[in-house]
Image (cartoon, rainbow over all chains, first blue to last red; front, side, top):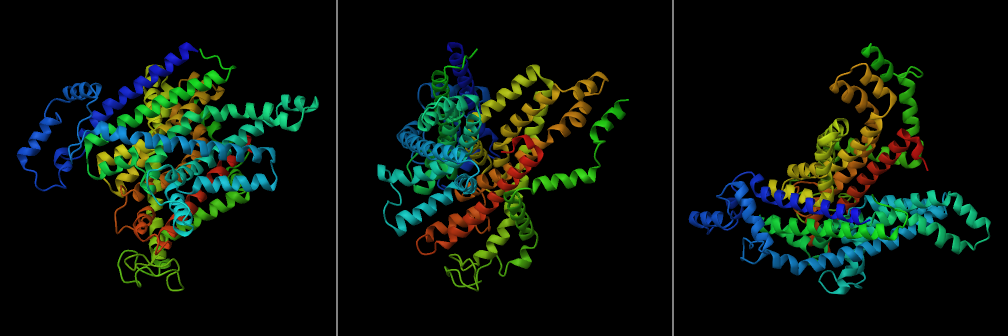
Length: 307
Length: 296
């Protein structure tokens, strides 16, 4: 177990290291002069100012030197400043990160509750109209683009019914984005849960449990559900990663003030220091949470002996 | 000798090719859902090919009708903020959607399958490096890779296709790699190896044809993922730019008129959803036809 945790952390650190290299290279992959592209939208910048920025970003030095300079700054918590407005990038990202995490976590909750219960019932009522109905819903759910689902929910619940606000950052505003992102992923989880539960229902221990006269609720909750959940819990880390990726889109639908929204704005403005900071923070969060969830899984499932 | 062995393997002596093809299509269209999926994909292709004949108006030039007209007999899906016929825009948009699917899947499949084949076949340090890189890319999520690619290349539909293509490479690499490892341990492969077949021949004549089934299934489902991702990029303003009739971009443009003219966002969204549904159903059907063990 300790060895497994150690291996996972080492793998995570490697991923983050690759990210830092990729992020440094990113600006050099831009076709043309990145500094000129960055300032293309503001005409008042003089060639001298551009040169100064180039020096400031270290772009006039050899690439390996740039990497060490960038890493040195990152390790000191200095992610640079935004191209417009000169605001510290790290601060901008850290102010918004909790909003993104809140959205991802609440969506994950929606995904798990809706996806697992739908998959469970579909498997339990296998080959009945309930199963067909739920799985039809699931394949429709997989096919609907999250941004469109978000707009449609907004149209019904905010514009037509007036129950929920269109956008904003308090908790009431979280309901629609979390539902959008959660439902979009619940479809995939319900399919996974269904096939996992079908396997469990055909196992010998299920027949034994029923044969010894246990109540159906006990059979379902103690025997079936627990075993069927192993595959689903194992997918938690991956699901969280999906949520973080999906959050980038959904934040922009609902004007939810998270790092995804900031990222899209900075891509528009060609604000490379912010884009670099975003990629680093995003990758670090995703890697860290995945490791934590994997460790949690290993700890929950006693059968797993990692070597 | 090698030649004969390979020939004996590649043609199934028990069943003629025509009958095998017939059986495959019968298996594929066995379920109602696969039939529906195939029908949707067929309609999409026909729509793209015959767009100029189907669309009653020009998709880009203004003046088809009054701005923001609700759906009626003259404009089935209504008109947008510039008075363009939404139905015509969606018909022409299908061309871009198919292009996105083909190009993005083409990029990710070619690169991914190659990486998976080489890693699985070569083993050793090549395998370790390639698959470690795939793992790293996998943990970044497709969205992040696509965003980084667009940030580098700049917003446009072509760049969005490339970005989406790159973002799915790890997925194809993993599926291929897993399949290669299984094939490598089979008798036919060991026999071919024993008679001294070259690397190239072993990879492309022996392994590749035998792992095509899972790759075809993944590629079909991959079209739907590519369409979803590229339309999301366009929706965010990072893909197709106005006045392109691309569905995600059309939908995004309608957001400003959401209260007054919800049809501008509704119909392109429906078009995306139905297309993705079609490829998902077809992909599921293919999986069942090619791998009967998966039937549930």
